[in-house]
Length: 88
Image 1 (cartoon, helix red, strand yellow):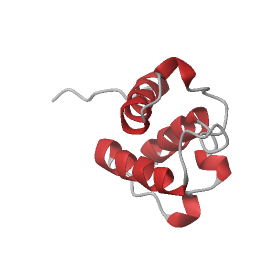
Image 2 (spheres, rainbow, N blue to C red):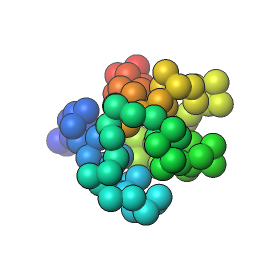
Image 3 (cartoon, rainbow, N blue to C red):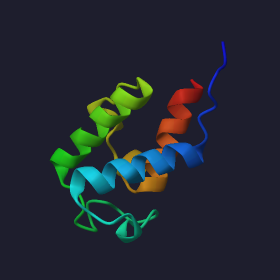
Image 4 (spheres, rainbow, N blue to C red):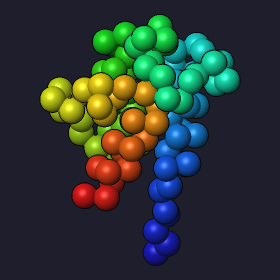
C-alpha cells in the first residue's frame, strides 16, 4: 500500500482552494500571512467551517481551545497547525 506524503505545500493548496470556494474570495486575494478574520474573509463561523474542513480532509478534530490566533491566525499558521497535528 502506498502512503501519500502530505506536504505543507499540498495542505496550503487544498486550504486556499477551500477558502476561495467556501468564502467567495479570489485565491490571489488571500494573503497567506495575514489574519483571515482581520482581512474580512471569515468570521467566527468561518473558523468553525475551517475546523470542519480540517476534520474532513485530515481526520483532525480541532478543539475550541486550539482555535487561537497562534493556530488559526493566517493561512500559513493553519497549515503549520495541520502539519504539526499530522505528525503526532
